[in-house]
Length: 294
Image (cartoon, rainbow, N blue to C red):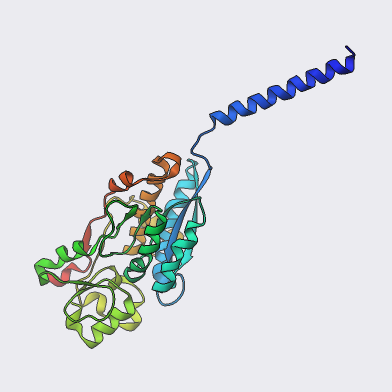
């Protein structure tokens, strides 16, 4: 055999060894790849409810930034879509998020009327979701968690004050109700027939109401989720990021992002299942301006 043939055989053997080693290493690679997974967010980033959208966005961003800066795996990216506080648009956004297979969980919307509108699309795609606004109910066998509570939670909270009030997300409102829909309609109802809205949900905390009904947030009792497990430095860290102190929406968004990260990083292939979502504790819901009823 010539010297050139010997060299060629040795080269082939070396290449084969490299190939085998590569296959072995690939077989040992964590099956939970990819190294980057995504969290989707639906919120209003334009229009009168823009402040709410950015309160929510900054709460989520803060928690994701903290995770990524810790050096833990996987790296997490945020995909945020604007629903413009429009139910018709919100109903379409789950279809857009579902096109990205790296999105493993969705947060939002943070308004009741858009959360209700988005429900059908979220259920259709079966993507794990933590809703950030109260809805009537969600299927118990699905992947959607009402992280801001359901109507029954708010009814129970206000029952000692008003008896059982029906929840309302849209007009017409023909009897005293707990308003859980959009802020503009809440302001209109309060000005025209205040007896129809003796109580409200998180919508009463929106900055958008200050222009339409400046005194409303301190004139009627309203309730919101109040996460009780936030880090001691949360308020300071949030203000450093957002330039203002956190409100109820920002705190809820941060807590939801923390749960989302826990769910996806503990799940097989970073895909939470129904059983995992059942183990999530919904934050307690409390009356924000409790001084009105003391």
